[in-house]
Length: 331
Ligand code: BYC
Image (cartoon, rainbow, N blue to C red; front, side):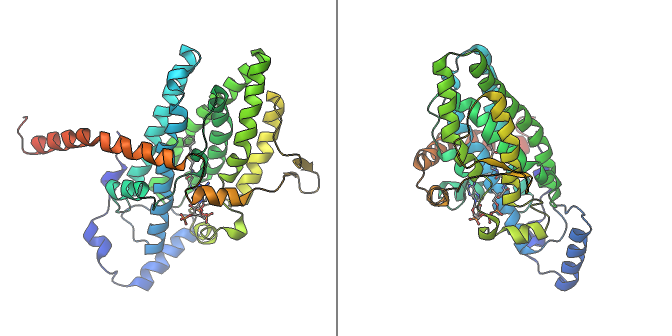
């Protein structure tokens, strides 16, 4: 069981005005500058707390919404081995959601509040999960590209200044590496031992997932309203553009090993920069997906709300059991 939430601060202490706000602020800034980790019970500025709740809860929502596109293929996996791997991966994602909700709870926000924000459309989740999984090759491609992008973004979060988030990220990143490798291996099998139709299926999946994957890193740095402050606070350690570039550079060589083409005619090595140049990203599409108008936004949210409603009896039973236990009735 993941028990970070037991560190949750006293709600009264959260509401109480600090004795000497400027002194507390100075001490907090000095700790951030020294690269110290902040724990749940430490004083922190309200904006720092809110930024973390926003990012961590959105990250948690992404994990549990992210179970849906792949979950769609559990019953149709081509072999028992692939089914077992996919089941384990989707289960891991549920676990990541739990670690992250627990980390966000240490900031004084409740699970119900976070779930409510997701269901009412107030909270975001990653744009990537609003695209459909049309064929089996989409499952491998999600592992390779989506988990690959996730690792690139999430490894620096293991050094996030907020310790409960950093601790959750260490566990998550270990599992994400396995996810990425299984996706790559699944695609490699189809590319090397599959039929022409299977190879074409892989290429088609890569064509559809490439651009949404590089949008996962968020808007360009000069249009990212949260980046500067989050970097100052050590929540984000590397900027959106820099991470996107690292991901593109790493993925080009992997695509060559697989034998697939990345769908960007402008993608080429720039000797002077020591990086790959790439074509223009369709930020209008990104904004449309964020505004709720991607191919699967409505379907994803409806699936989450349905799962929540249908799970009400489990929550009620668990609460009733806990109440009985507290009253010593089952002793
Ligand atoms: N999708 O100022 P910015 C996974 C929002 S799960 C949706 O740059 P920030 C996996 C952003 O929230 C992958 N929204 O923001 C699971 C902000 O809106 P608000 C999820 C996006 O926070 C299952 C606005 O745009 N990973 O890996 O500094 C299976 C302006 O952006 C996106 C995480 O959540 C997007 N792509 O930086 C497989 C990692 N991009 O909140 C895999 C943790 C931006 O102001 N999160 N927005 O209304 C982060 O690292 C950062 O929050 C982001 C954005 C880099 C995503």
